[in-house]
Image (cartoon, rainbow, N blue to C red; front, side, top):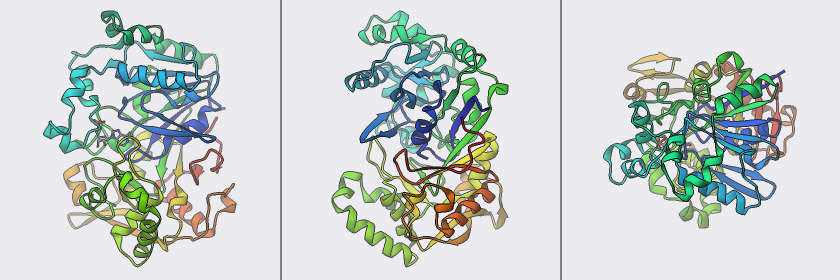
Length: 431
Ligand code: IMP
């Protein structure tokens, strides 16, 4: 029986983890965030209501679940209180039976936010940070100059500190005791493997460990307690911020030039039609633009367009390895509908040599040329498919190829944003 699951992003974040976590959270007793802070952002759709979270785990919208913000995270107290108050206004009662924060999590202070400003700091600009103070806060933690949230609460008489005080607990005991009692525990990853400070495309990464190892150090449980690691991948690839992206279609400059979602929205239908026509005539930039438009690949908070590209099987195989993924989830498969040809990167050419291993050096990776396998696409609408067998043959073949390239089995396929647009292909490592 599966009792503990880690969900991790397999790419550069924004893989649609929120929906998968939400789906699994329904069957979990405890949901825990273990790394990152309010640099993350995910939308969960429940019925006709949309919830946006940056810090609070996705389990908060479910009844009778304990949500934990683990010691590996960094917490901006004002943002946390803001999210709590938003939820309260929506009718959710938030107390320590629903949400607790590790006493050892570090505090994002105003000075961290001020420092992490891409408009003022050339380094933050170069990385393309979210500007939320994440990097400076982790830096102070590692330099042993940071302030743990328990110390912040003790030293501050602010309304924010008073509101948070009852929620601050030594969560490692809560989690380990719950596991001992047979409770189901879900570890909710933020960001993605390729943004990991150790295993990602350094320096174009975040400052924590979003990978499965981070779920252990970020919560205080041992590796023997984990039953399964599920990696979430989009059926294609996206990236926000700067850094190497071997399968990118078009350039970062071209994407940024398109502008934010508010500019696209009024002309969406014509733009989508044009993009598909040009994509199918072989124009690579428009292939990427089609994914961006159809997949609504615009930042949840900023509205900024995301860079898009084909599925990178070399990077995915690496992510499967680094996390020890027991299965993978493919999201947004419906977005590829209409493209006559779909490509999967199965190797890179670097300095005139072919490799199927991910390239750890970012300067070298930036020079890597993708080598593709081309597969026929599909024109059928798959957004109502309820099983693998109901999918068109070409879609099935694409999924089988992804399994082969990643060397992992697919457990869940997502064909749309709604909860009922989720196909369970293999439930052996789910709750
Ligand atoms: P930071 O985490 O704000 O320091 O940003 C570092 C890099 O990680 C930037 O390229 C960000 O765009 C990226 N990043 C951080 N959080 C996320 C996320 O949740 N999704 C996608 N990219 C992210």
